[in-house]
Amino acid sequence: MATRIQAKFQQLQKAGKKAFIPYITIGDPDLNTTFELVLSLEQAGADIIELGVPFSDPLADGPVIQRASERSLRGGFRLKNALELVQQLRKNTEVPMLLFSYYNPLFAYGFKTVTKQAAESGVDGLLITDISVEEAAVPVETMRGVGLDSVFLAAPTSTDDRIQRISQYSSGFIYAISRTGVTGMQNSLSSEIAPLLHRIRAHSRLPVAVGFGISHPDQVREVEKLADGVVVGSAIVRYIEETSGNPRLPVLVGNFARWLKGES
Image (cartoon, rainbow, N blue to C red; front, side, top):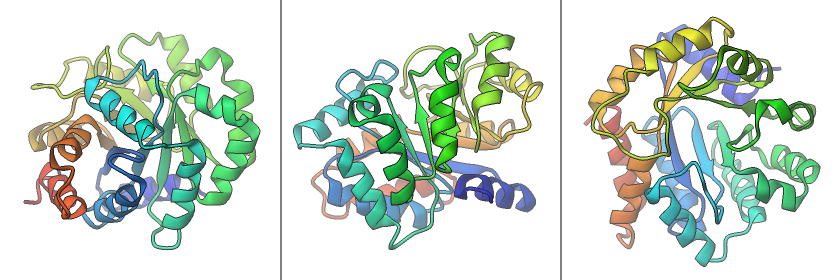
């Protein structure tokens, strides 16, 4: 049976649409607000939501998401909070949810335990940024064994051999990094996107979503012409940072997502 992520891409493909995938950091500014943010983003048209697991050494993330992780950890975030959050959200929504994490918190918790509990809580997949495909066989087998999708990153610097391995171990979709470096907003899109997508599609029939650096409706539309989905992270996390303290924060973030989608 298809996972929620797989079913969503199938639905969008039949409708001739592309996936809009916002990213937020769990616990920023607090867990209750994260709960409301997920529901607001779904109402704003999010097709899949990436939930970032705060980590003290987020090597792939730029300063915006680093600060969000620091705020969440200072607020007392623990990995079990992410699982409890999704479990509560599942009482209100069926939107596909992907945990975006580094391996260290999952390893410390116990990888078999966390994957089992994640699946039971209603998580649909894991994107583990720092697991290399050369070491992915056992973790992927564990994820697949409990019905979780395993999403891997492909970068412009990835060799064809690595892209083939990424295709082998990915399910749900493949996350194409639009440029080398860390997450963060950019004024223009990289010319490396189209060649990277061409190479990925030579090895895989999975949907491909593009992220890193997308922060404006024009960029969203440009990526939609090339890819099956668009991931927006730092722009949303920065907006949360700038609007934190406003009691209408979830509504405002939902409106910001609509703006990114070109709907307002």
